[in-house]
Length: 264
Image 1 (cartoon, helix red, strand yellow):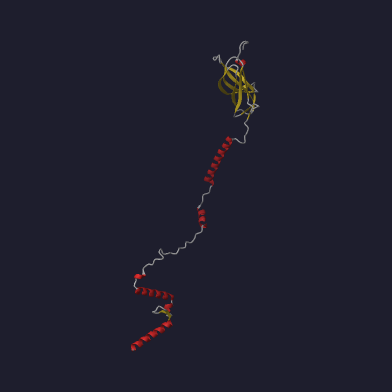
Image 2: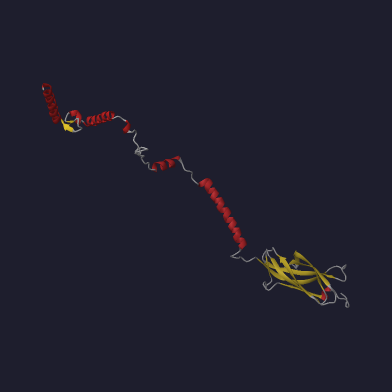
């Protein structure tokens, strides 16, 4: 750089720092760690922020480069006398240790676009790489545990149903049958479908037939009871029931009356 010439490093002041939520500048593994870039154009030239990048270095080996980190593109103009703040992120997958971090920006002189980019360092310091803190309430972990528990319970239930559940045997069925009580079925008394309807009309039957039928029924009843067959009781012509002695007396009277009538 000559005495009468101005480079981009002289015109633009560049810095980078961690946000207030990370005051100790910790780089957490497995997360996008936020940084904030600050650019102040104090010169008379216009510049363009083309991109920004970072790299990790070994602090115990003369700041040897371990790996280049991600690069972000911006293409944002920085006019003379203005300033610019831009977000930047770094990602880490290293074991917990002290490691060197370098962040730089690439600027383009708007008046000389054919010239190469100007690389200006914004941050060059040692940072601590740490593991993420364990959270008791993590929705993603809870959802993962729920899915795993559901799969395990479903598999255990399937194994139990297929291999450990006992199927009922015939002995068990017999025992079940023997334990059940059998109730005796008593046939109900048969009732006539038409209880108030007589099988025939007595008005159309002659009186002589009805008397003969009644006398036959009465003889059957007394014959079955043994009363009429023993000769103790008889039915008179008037329909009265008398004993055997009374019947014999009446018969003798009838016979004597008949003989007297013949003599006369």
